[in-house]
Length: 207
Image (cartoon, rainbow, N blue to C red):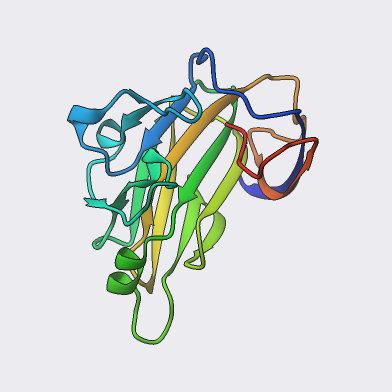
């Protein structure tokens, strides 16, 4: 997997609907969630979220600031104050295609306490050994990439670039059919450039 290209998604929907069933490989991780709360169903989307404990060994769990409109997966986060590179190991099937999504829900307390005095919080995302994107601490952001799995697990890494401690609110993995996105190959992945919605009644990301 040596190359990242951009992809644009066009979603044609009348309205977002909750998930009725979840396919094998359909994984939703609530970063920073305590193990005893793992397996809850998000009331907004009907998706089951699990704790990130089985997928990473380091980092610190934190409560995030939020209000009555904040979705439950974004009320916790995992922060990485030590180590240059901290990676989640997501289960995959070699040769299958996936969409991976990292959600960084801005948290004012976490941001102010981890950023340097000369710059706002900023860190990089890597998919395996390859650069994916740079996270800027300017609001809740969603980062997406499409890739073909090269092993039984895929490392999604948060890389400290010296401008504060990286953190993540949620990570989602979605299996894709082999016939779509033919540009996604073992040596070539895609990252999201833009998303256009046709007929959607709100601005939420389709899960």
